[in-house]
Image 1 (cartoon, rainbow, N blue to C red):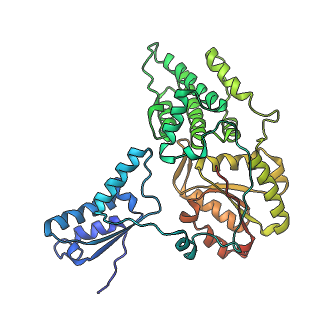
Image 2 (image 1 turned 180 degrees about the horizontal axis):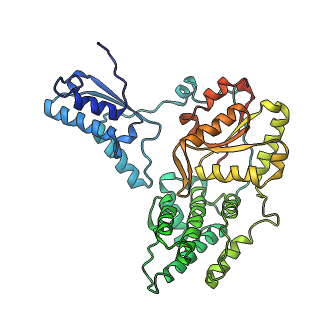
Image 3 (image 1 turned 120 degrees about the vertical axis):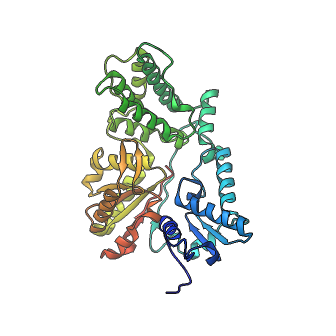
Length: 406
């Protein structure tokens, strides 16, 4: 059977090349072009990389070329200017890239990437931010770690960020003192530029500790506070109330009674920042959400659906927990929420989103068992939410989105 285009997963294609090696049906001499979707996987330990290396070897041996087209919305997940440059350099080398282009805003809109005003209603509410946060013009994602640690070094963090950082260091200090009486054995992961590596380190060290031991209790607490510190760094020190809510949900203020004096004082200094009603986030963003969600729920009735887009998975988790458990205002008005992130992704080392759970929640959203989803923007590309809505009797015009800057 003859064909002009072969569409395949990378591993299946590699197997075909091995099985049909003698017939050479899938040798590179039979192809004039190769398209890699999500081509950033080439710079990882991935079948794409094996295919790219095979193409390069064939081209060098036969002094011939195959036209390569790589597609990706995110060329690299590297963090830090040097790491980003290195990753892009490797990608260009592995693909023999000679030209790199991006679609214009007009092209994206004409292709339907940006929602039309008559399909999804977008609302933006202004809010104040704490004094002393990282200025907008200095917010470079690849330099997030360096920016925060530079502020620590020069003492220019917000008072809230300083308190969170101090608690983390006090917990680390107490763990160091528990290392069988030998100080210096604890190695803080805070020198790692990958923020999620901090909490992963605490999680792994907890698993290696004796169950119920002081050491394990401290590592469990440290994981919670590493996540809190990551939230501070990722929000450019803005999201104070959200961080406090994370700590409240996960018993981050628990004191064993044998904690050091300095650790106890540091924990109490942050706990005092909670409002008199510890179950309420005093935030203009939450106030805006209250107003918007209830107004739209009243206007659209049982057919109401809403998506709250956030930038971080941890934000989706914390905000959803708050909406469902810590604010009777939302439940009283019939607001039922779930969070959805990329399938098989980690919120923290201890909190994961399985594919089956993501599918279950989206199905509940389609049926109306829940009417609000808190999600990262990845849901637009990696979930079947749009398909679910089309299958439902609800008109897409009943859909509202509420982007935040978290």
